[in-house]
Image (cartoon, rainbow over all chains, first blue to last red; front, side):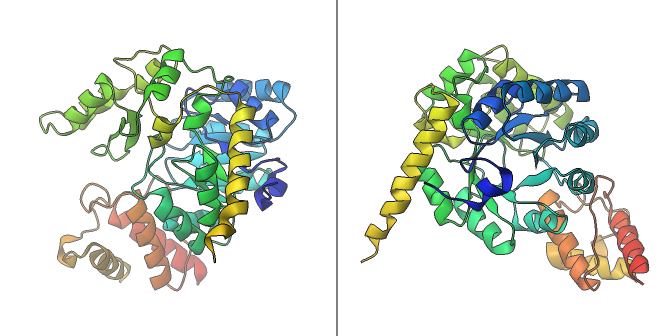
Length: 315
Length: 78
């Protein structure tokens, strides 16, 4: 059985986190992943404290296993989300899209384990200094907000830069990716796109269909001009957004406005023209819906086989 | 004194002329430092000022903001 210190640290069975995808990672999905032995994570996204508290309470009704909350630090409600996490004594908080250091003392004092998503060694070092339990080094293969570095290059460099455990994310969708992450020095993985296809994930069926239909080359990074690049599946919205970025007569405000609400339109309404279907480059490899439990078991058992067999390469 | 030292560190980091850095220069817009650059820069500033600890928050927008943060930390350390 795949043995990783992060399991003991967090009280989970398998070293697999489900990424905190906005408009997608709700209580139902998080509870399913946690019940399956991974760490299910609720996205606090741009919602207010009442929404998050409701989701945490719902997840608690669905599972007695540890759960996490992802705080999107650019959210106007990040401060109140941070407070709710303390009050509800969530086991793990992950963070993205910024530096979480100003919230960390309160979380740590409340006994919440802080595991930020980091795009560089500098940020990894900074959150380690602030008391992070571990970090998730996420390469730009992932869906949603992305950094420049790839998982292959970022993970080993973060492992060298910090003493705390490192999980790998970005482009991991099966046991091969998971085994590779362990070879790079990670002791666990976070996956987003593959959990989009969990049967317990209530994202709109058009979203799932687009991920299943996607080929390897079907994602694009938009938003570079705005300073927050986002990987999405190519569709008419993504192509238009990309075109607008290269049109100097269009202001940043106009582009921001064009993108506002597009993820919700994809995730909740399944709008294939105007929706922003955030997904990682691994989409091309994902071909079917499975239960959260099956996703985790398939990934972990394949990784175990590969890691056991790795010595065959050494003569 | 703080400004000169910090401006020199920024100039080294960005490979630019120190004369182009002013107290009111915006880190992102004027100096084209993204969030990752800013963190790297802060770490080099911390090192240059005897390993003080700078906590970045959303309020740090200009070179002057950085100077004031560093001054505060150095005074606090003394």
